[in-house]
Length: 182
Image (cartoon, rainbow, N blue to C red; front, top):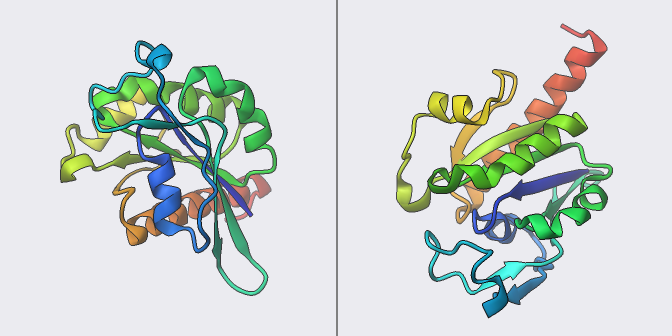
């Protein structure tokens, strides 16, 4: 089963995949060049020196028959042409949000809404702080009550696990509702 992890530049997608993958994650990190300095806003992540240029890939075994394949998207608009291939066949998505840079996650939210792919918004708890209430984040993102909004820490395996479980529960609930099941 395929799960997509998306969001803006520097929100923690690569970190989340790396925190939970049982295999050494495949990453396509490249150095941030001087040409990208004006494009990639590193103000809130000044220590960030690399960026994902294609995708991140990790894997989690649920049981003998079920594996979760995690695909992290690149966060910059200029790599958006890759999203269709990355998202193809996915069950659901986790959209990671950095509340210091909310506008960076709008393209991911819009993409999954238009694609009809179930998703969960996960507010990454940088420094353990929740800068805005979840209801305010829901309002800012203009997502309905059917889109779960949770907090998590992309650096912590159990927190990432819980976020991925939220994606699976949301996907299951949407499938049940579409099938008319109670």
